[in-house]
Length: 260
Ligand code: PDD
Image (cartoon, rainbow, N blue to C red; front, top):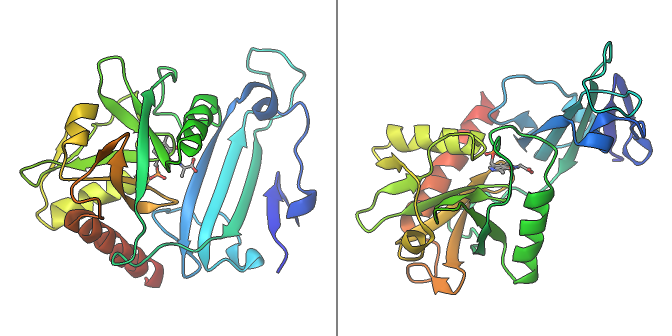
């Protein structure tokens, strides 16, 4: 089935979907976006069902939604009387749903060179792109960005977690230096409901390297165990028990939400 994109009020073939060259997203990265997972044709963790998903035949995959300030002659200040430009696309993707066979990944660490409002899900992602490419060039899956004090902020498109020696999950608290991941938020709820202790505090790279387990969370990964950070192997180099347990809880939650 050919893909359909939603562009400013029209459903168009994906190959032909286009935005104006003076769109402020294109010129200034003046826009925001959302990515939502799809399980059994239903949006997970998303209250607003804004897309006619069946047009793309997506049963397992992603929905991407982007809003920019709109099209206007190039000039820095907010343009007056401009309509926001909205684009929505959907794509099929295999979601990794089996905690027993979930593949793990490696991360590298790299300085966090982003701006002061990382809580905004802006389309201005150049530092994230550079860091992700650095990870790929090093044969790793993700880069964990590190602040000036040596604390991990988050991954380039994921939130970062570790399990300490006492079996407590640790993840950085929300602030303007990380994105408040929806998957992170749901994991926190699932952990609380299942008596798994979580401490929301920053952790250092050294702490992470000495951790019992590590993982990342996001809409596109759900939960991916991390078995190496730079040159340090985490635990026994295999996905840890708590990581797999948390993924199992999330998958069960996603399936239940999809069936509701
Ligand atoms: N990225 N941190 C950053 C910087 C992100 O870009 C994302 C999401 C997350 C995890 O957020 P969530 O759980 O809501 O997906 C954390 C999306 C998936 C992306 O850019 O493709």
